Length: 395
Image 1 (tube, helix red, strand yellow):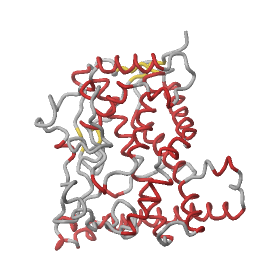
Image 2: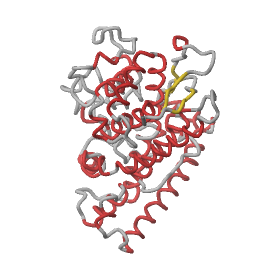
Image 3: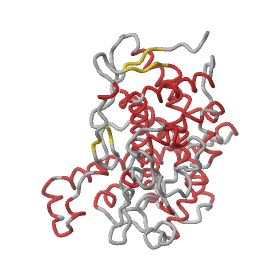
């Protein structure tokens, strides 16, 4: 389907939440396939998500992961006390994306209602029920708050650019996505005219796509490792062997951690962040990545967490292996695969390097709850509350 009919199914249906929250679907995720989408996609790939750009923001990942490790280290003083790992991971991933895209920390104080169930999208003739349930009102209120915030962000960036404070070479190498978009628009280099709403839609797309999904994947990875102590031991030993005695793990270290990369792939196979990929417009084609990646015809023991299956394997979530589509496939596949993988691998490596992880007293690995809660992003039904113990990598 993605090879033969990809263009035919490349448009997106116009859903009520997307229309309200994403400026009538003017972002990348829900705009229709065409010249506008191609130009905006090109901007994001070249200016935000290229390998060079992802590497240039390593200082952002370093800072936020260091802050995460410090918070966990402080919690270790309460010996035996479990912590809410997902909450900490959400803060870290949100801050990384915020700094990358907006140049500032931007903690979400409330969930965006993007995945809210809209009866009108399922049964078009019942659209009035959305109004009666109050959902449309809540969506509109959320949109107004987001819109005002993005207007302020764009204004701040415009004023800063006008003052000439970003002219030196060091600052130009650390420009965030908003800086880059505004500069390209000013220089007439976009290839497409972008209105203020176009800019805000693209900025919001970038922010939403990289927060909850990343934190959830990290929680699932830690949960699977804790449920499978042999995999945990092997991954931990690899990380500590590669980075032995170092004060900071760097990306060159990550490149040597083959088993860690297999752990991430196996986590994404069992727990794709968005199990139902974004819908296609033609009679609403919805691809069930969750089912495809657990298909016994394509995978040996598909329900088991077996990281070894990816050792010496050419199957990759960035390739054309359609049995493994955690990041989507075809023209409308997720653009930020490299960005997401770098962040997930880097965070897990640090968690395993600095801490030993155990379940709370009285809990055993085989009984660890792995039930899911369905939504736009699939979370653990019961959040993981592990007990960290500080480990010193120094002799």
